[in-house]
Length: 257
Image (cartoon, rainbow, N blue to C red; front, side):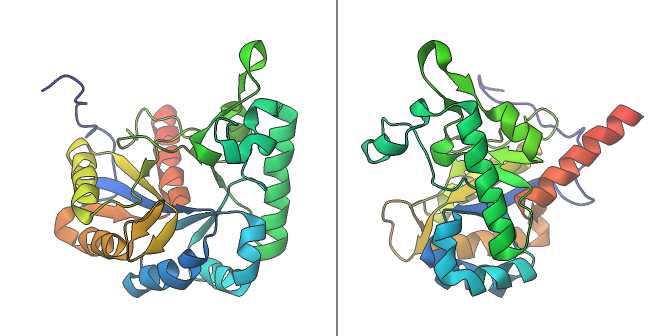
């Protein structure tokens, strides 16, 4: 075993016949998710998780309501998508200028807006830009505990590998970007998770035909769905909330034994 490899977590019991879990997550309620992503997933009967911005979802609200009815997950991604001010376009809404109270209000405001817009209670959260702290210097604080208090699970971003179901922090799960990637790279990530008995969470934004910035290729998503649906591959493709609930239940069951 080479340095950095992780032993398979085979002692964790995935559902019968399953070797790994896979969740497809898409952020920001981009119009292409409604027009291209959802029809593609529905074609394959695949359920995905959408971390929406309430205002961005309003123009396609009927599409998102149908997505809920069809079994897709709607998650919380804040109201205004604050990130580090090191991203110049975020300078007026920088997490460095936030407090725990303010980020809590952001999250709670989005929760209420999602409830009003789509009639659902978001049970998982995606960290905006993958950033998990507010403030700076001696006032810098993680808001992962705040997410843990409010949600079953929270998804990060810009990670490079799957989650260990036995060990992962449900409040800060690894999310691996798949924007612009060909299916071959997605397959490599899935196969790595399968060998280790892990849980791979792929994170996307726009959906389209060209490998542009924050664009996940339709061909990649289609091939992922086809690959995951082959029972020979032993992949459980489901929403983040469903897999997180299963992991949580398995852990609780072990504690009670």
